[in-house]
Structure formats: C-alpha cells, structure tokens
Image (cartoon, rainbow, N blue to C red; front, side, top):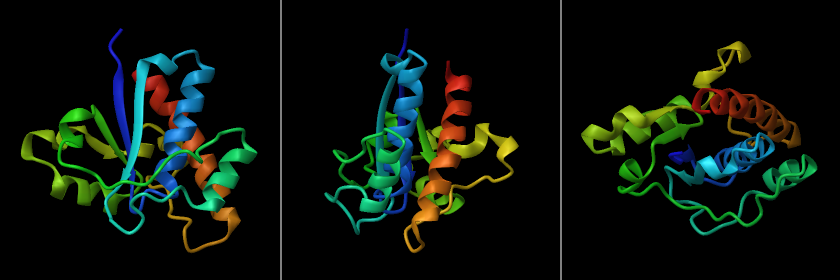
Length: 155
C-alpha cells in the first residue's frame, strides 16, 4: 500500500504543527495504520528554526500520552511541495503563505488541516502562543478531531 506523506504547517513550527504531527501519528498508530504515513511539520517563518516545541505544547501533548519533545522546528523548503502529498495548514494565513511559496503545479496539495472536520464549526486551528494553557488544550481537542477526520478520508 502506498504511503501518504503529510506535512503539517503553522507559523513558527513550535506549537500547532508539532502537535498535529504528534497527534495524527498517535491516531494513525491507534488505528493500526502508522506504517501508511510519513509525517513531518514545518513553519512558514524563521523565528524558531532548530528549537524544540514550546514547553506548553509539549506538556499538553504529554498529558495525553503523546511525546513531541524530539521534534525540532524548521521552515518550509521548496522541495517540500514535491516531497509531500499534502501540506496541511493550520490557518488561512499559513495556507495563503504556502500558496505564495509553492511552485505553480504544487498548490493542489495545500489545504486547511480542519477541512475534513466541518462538524467542528471552525476552519482554523487557533494559535495558542500568546495565550495560556487553555489554548493548548483547545488546539489538542481540535487537532484530535481533525486527525480522526483526515485519517478516515485517507484510509
């Protein structure tokens, strides 16, 4: 069976996209489908390159049994658009930035992460960086629901 290559993208790659990479990996593993996916995350900005996930993101994920501490932030690279089947943006700004960076034939693989979960009533995963711990819990709730929906579509 072909392997899906997914890149989760947010602004700095220390909050939402590392959480999404970790949570989707966990959801796929629990469904017995981890081997069907290659997962990575990146940011559109350069501020945090090489840094681990925000400690609040790592702690929130760990409370749910998901370890994202080994991830390191990186910026989206030109070859990501051909290396990955889907580039999953956490919000519309990330999506717009990706479309602006993408070589023309590769824009079809860029979509909002929550696109498969319209029942949530939100299209974007909010950035928790400038808020408190509750924001990270909200991100995890949205990302878990979005991950289940995405897995159902790709399975």
